[in-house]
Length: 250
Ligand code: TIU
Image (cartoon, rainbow, N blue to C red; front, side, top):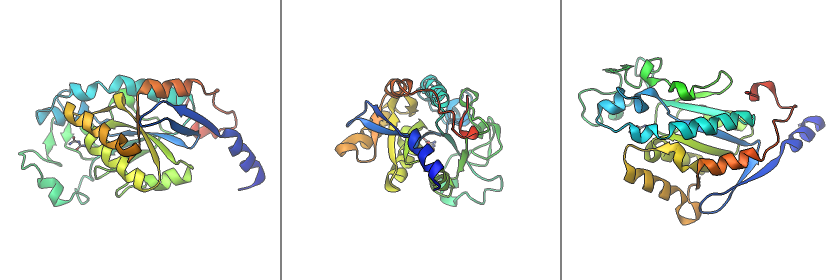
């Protein structure tokens, strides 16, 4: 790193203490990204695939407003945002047979659902809900599995951007959020999960999914509320004027 870049990046360093369980999360600015997991229409919208399977989408829709607030504050602070979508190539070559046939349902991945082919990239139901739609500068990770690291370039993006901490939100708490937090933890990333920004179709899984993350001294990460993160962000000065243009989103 040349001397002027080194000096500039040191100027960026700030420590943000966020109230969390099992203890405060020390957020290293700017090496922390907001990672929004699978806020896709088929999981969240009435009339989508999730509801077609008999799930109560209102359980997930509760997370939209807190995510809107957090995303807006994150963008205002000029910090990196990354989105993920669960889905497959239209030819389904990245879909394991085991996943295709799981559940023995009449309608499975790749079949025509209420909003196009289910969990297929490019289809309406696969896309992110309009309320949280990514900006062109925010990477979208298309992942074939539950975890955001498996068969994706997420780790390369995080490394290239010097990111070592993640604030993870999205759906569902016990499936894609938990899997991603576990994968991230094993790769050395520190994860904070704001409880009201993650959702499950099943209230008991919501509760235990969060307990599992923060148990045993934070075995996989930390759990907070979105208001604790917002309070922390509000204490930051406006984005540094030297910040690269593609990271400045407002
Ligand atoms: N995003 C995500 O969690 N995908 C799932 O498959 N969730 C279920 O709850 N099935």
